Image (tube, rainbow, N blue to C red; front, side, top):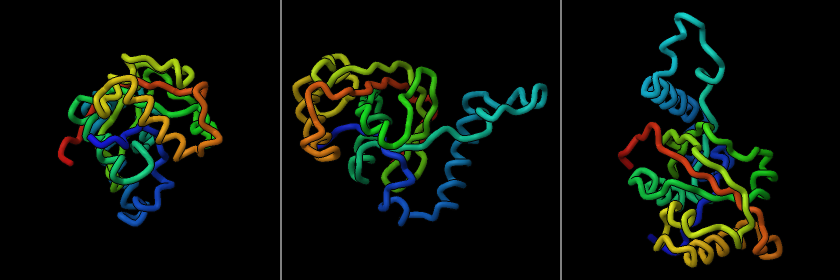
Length: 190
């Protein structure tokens, strides 16, 4: 993969390139259809005849995509669908500025491709926040990008966050949210 692979959770609704690919109603319908199929795969909804539906079972989880552009979104998603990428990182600063909370173990989310299509349902399995310079080799390898080394992870993520946040906001003690996940429902053809 290219040397520009860095993972960042980006709210799908704010990406202009995706909004031109399909209308919001079309995207909502596709996400709802994907969630309905994923719910069936997970066995959710089978008890609704006995106990009624719960909001968490009916409302689709949050959607997001990797990176900050269409090419990066598709490239990183491909690594996930191949099973090579089982972790992602974003800065605490990015989440705070977007008004989002830190993911929690057990959270579900739907990952979109560069065109805004729902492609995978992920379950967060572990979350840790640590300064940039304390992210370890094991996590860098789990991200599945470039050569999988910590040196490569640091170089590429520093380049990415300097570009996204600005040089003045990056530092080696920048808090990084390290999220590990599992794919629980894939849509595998890109």
